[in-house]
Length: 481
Image (cartoon, rainbow, N blue to C red; front, side, top):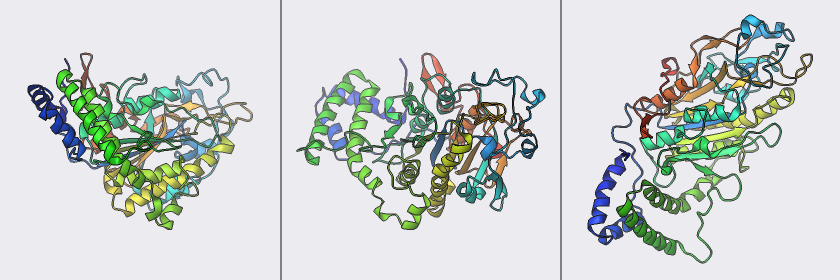
């Protein structure tokens, strides 16, 4: 029998014994009443966590699905301009694992950045001129130019970072942190997910539920996905003719029955069912307020660009994310597709930057103005980068293929070193030459900033203690402020 050491579960053993001794009488009624009058406090997490004082009390993950080109956006290489169209030397390429789309190429034409780079801020951080708004926040950022991964295809790459394995089935990072640290909000979930796409301009990526799943953790810790059409969360509204008071009475009766089953069977999924019903009831009032933007100033809304109030866009999701973070949501995961430029690099990369640049910067600026950036970790990440060589006709390449040997991320706020660059690559942005950061290292570092020792937050499943970072990962101290 597996023993879940979650702090509330310890208390629930006592309640279960109490329910059993009262044969479903006053104990069950008391639980239903307690839940019904809103006394169910926010989940406070496991005993002993956080392991150390957190620098980041909340996290927003700006996931850029498809593989943004580090060569074009974050890692300037002047030599590549001089060698445009020439083969990248064998001594540089080595035995790098590539996708099947380009692994058999006979030519490896060097493709430099399609737009110039500029230096931004007092730190002089070099970024593409296609990212002027993110560049305006350069002095808040730590740019990591030495990320690397074994994954060469999209779904395994995303799954690898989100869950610690390329094969689906393990808990996502948001689920791990919700499980370990609990929630600071009584009226919203601890872990919220929103998705957006590139409006059909490029090859979009699918969003699989396991990217925010609970894996083998109790299902109450999975991410709650807000929809980008219709109601944010389905079934929150009362059916026609059912008042809020009637629904409250119904939930009290259901809670009593579920508590009786919990007393008999001790199934943690029954606890999840009770908690989800209650959260849904409280969200009836919190969600409409969440998307009421009437109190936002024109200056604030303008920062997010023309799509700021268009539901389902990356810009609108960034605005909602800030409001979620303000209301105590611990982990917000925004997933945006469209960075997969195999054959339209010259026409669509800039358009993708226009869709995402202003909203990401606006989110950082809003957090900073509200005094929240200091203890909110903003992470801009992806599954891999793009090849330094052009894909397609060697004489006239139109795109770039997947590339995991070296690529770039950036972080801001939440205890990272401001206005800094960590890691470096060679003259072709191909091989890491300084301070490599593996996927597991980044996971360990994010958890460390959240106050969690990644080696100590574990869950026993099928006879083994599992953790997000598997048996790997080291905190990257050079990223820490």
